[in-house]
Each structure stands twice: as C-alpha cells, then as structure tokens.
Image (cartoon, rainbow, N blue to C red):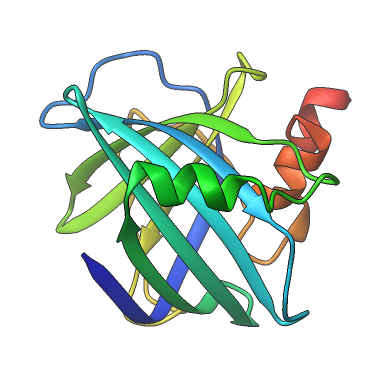
Length: 168
C-alpha cells in the first residue's frame, strides 16, 4: 500500500476512555522516528499489529502548517523495517501506543492511548479543511484542542514520555 498527499487533521487531548466502542478496530503500534536526512522532512517507521496480523510502514512527513502535512507512506517488509530502525533518532524515544479507530458522525476517529498515561489520551480526525467542524461522541471528555500545540505532537510526546499534563 502506498499513500501520498495532503493530510489535514485536528487533534484533541481527552480523558482516557476505558469503555468499549462499537465497531472499533484496535491497532497496537510501535513507532520509531528516524534521523532526518532533510531538516524539513520527518521520517518514521511503524510496526502495526491488528487482529494477529503484522504490517510495517515507512513514512515521510513535511509540515505545511498547524494540522496540515504532506505525507508519503508505503508498506515495507519486516526486514526493511528492522534495517531502517538502525537509523533511529537517539534523541527520541520509541512510541508504543494503542490506536482505537472508529467511525462517528461520518468521520473516522483515531484515539491513541499510551502506556505512560493512565489519565490522558488523544483523538484526531482527518478532515477536508482545518476549519471543518468535528463532532465527537458524548462519551469522549475533551479537555482541549491541541492541533496547533507542538507539545502534543507524537515526536514531543515520545521525547518527554508523557503529555504536559502528566507532569503537572
């Protein structure tokens, strides 16, 4: 699978939701950031386990603006994944997270839960426009939108091993 193009997302900090969600798909993700070969491009590899199946991906992202990125992603073999992991950025910690994917109000939502936080998680939706309205389910308690706050990017969360609120 190859995917390229613009990615427009809004992201929210939420209280961790411990209940089941009807129709959800669960991915266990190991995400490793790689050394940059171009200062404008963030590189990463992911190993995703879902329903007993393992898939690996290589992704390059160029940040355009808050919530807007140009993304190129391709599926890779486990051998290529292991090889690329040797290029891991030593300043960033590998991210382990559980992603819960479900559809609500016609939008696919991705809720990320991290083992280092019992209180918080994040949820994001891919949109057609950064100003597009998004309705989240009533069972999700939104603390605040963090789309424009770099402290909530996965790479910063990896470096700090927590959300800013985990250290308050």
